[in-house]
Image (tube, rainbow, N blue to C red; front, side):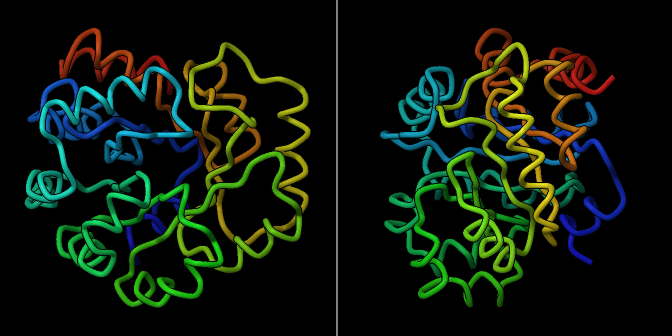
Amino acid sequence: MNRLKKLFESQENICSVYYTAGYPTVNDTMPVLEALQEGGADLVEIGMPFSDPLADGPTIQASSEQALDNGMSIQLLFEQLETMRESITIPVVLMGYFNPVFKFGVEKFIGKCQEIGVDGVIIPDLPFDEYRELYENLFNEAGIANIFLITPQTSDERIRLIDAHSTGFIYVVSSASVTGAKQNVQQNQIDYFNRVNSLGLQRPRLIGFGIGNRDTFATACQHAAGAIIGSAFVKLLGEHGADKQQIKAFINTIKN
């Protein structure tokens, strides 16, 4: 049983944390990952920095710019994660835009993910139909989950189609906006979560965008298998660096 499947079958209130590879310093990728696991994160999404991150808010944009200035690249990220499975047991997902993956080579990229033990990939700007036509077999043969995003504007028909072609989880974008921590969850968002839940989908869901404190995390967990924290954690890294105690304390404030 793969790590993502095992996690969703065995646990509720899943805390997934996003951070940008190579931020705040280029060699922080593995120390942050290890600290997140020690702190109790259930799933980690590592961002592959890109120069034109259209869906990212200012906090994650700034982290991507800094990481690129630090010399971060997909090749370097794979080198940093090469031996991660010697110490990391939780699921790890890579998240980023299609342009750098395409330049690296999609088949080569999937092969490296399989080799080092990456469990899934989130590429928000990879068109669903293009994925099905050109890449779905590659992902399935390698056992790498390709995780799709849905938004409040996604039709029920499209959500069901995405569900049918998903092998990991569905990323439920909480609102039609860029990333960034919010203080609370609005009623219209709850209505949207309820609409998604009424569809009887096969795949578990995690709610992301705007989740950044204990209250928003707890609310999201009432409507999905868990939630994804991004900007609030990246902000912490910007303020404190890869400080293990700060990272563990942050996870504790979210989960407990």
